[in-house]
Length: 360
Image (cartoon, rainbow, N blue to C red; front, top):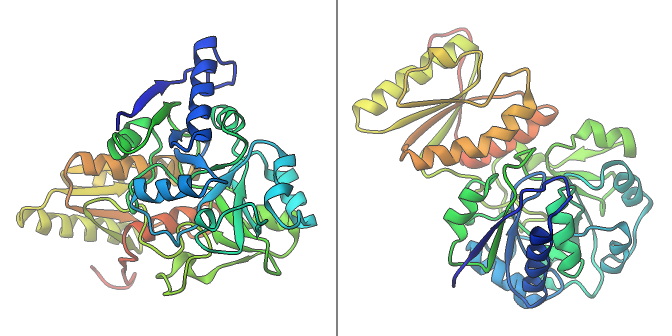
């Protein structure tokens, strides 16, 4: 399959005639059962017609994704929610008003028109309304309902630029819309509204505190920062190893100086054994690390920067053939909870906690 790549430069939504025509063509691909990768404010999505079972099967095949891992249905208008769910609850309206369009996915009981191929066999459907102008226009041209997981091979870090979509999906899908780099860099928050109180199944930019201010009590699934259970996933990213680089990633937690010393010791040992070593650090400690490649996610005072750069750095380590990676740990509150969720998934929950009273 020849994959067509089209650059969209007018990211404010003021599309040129050429770009408008390209988006119309991409929408036609979706309506005809094809697949189109496109930018959102979070990461790039791999889109297909959410109401076409064959399209959802194509998405699973292109990604190499287990078919029991639900897809998220993307819409561009609030009035398009009610046809695909059994009921638009008061809670759903509250959080839609507060956070849509934006990086929030809600789970509701599905209507009959949503095929099980899209929901991973579940009676619920995950829905979100992205804010990115390219995504919004594509959804409308594509028929209003676009199923879209992240546009990467299953298990790899989600792409925040078209470069990595091309790397994973060239020859597997019909079209890629290149809309530059994503603003947030982590996938949307997923909130399950079928339980009481509502429960966060995947943390993201919309935090527990933000949801609590709108809905009152909101719980968090205990597996977010724990190893996966053997149960079928209720939402994308819950069961399987995700976001993983090719190299072995280990997260180190503890007092700052001990973390630096421990990572440098392990890096020296690994390099002596022939490994190419990468370190994921922050601005505050970056100069202290000794490895083949050292990358900063940004300052610890700027969680937005840390979230935005995480996947791109993991991908850069793949480009540089890094075989061992060590990362600093982050506070598991607010946006930090989402950052740690993705890091732990990428590391297969390989976390080393140093004792602050002892040398490493």
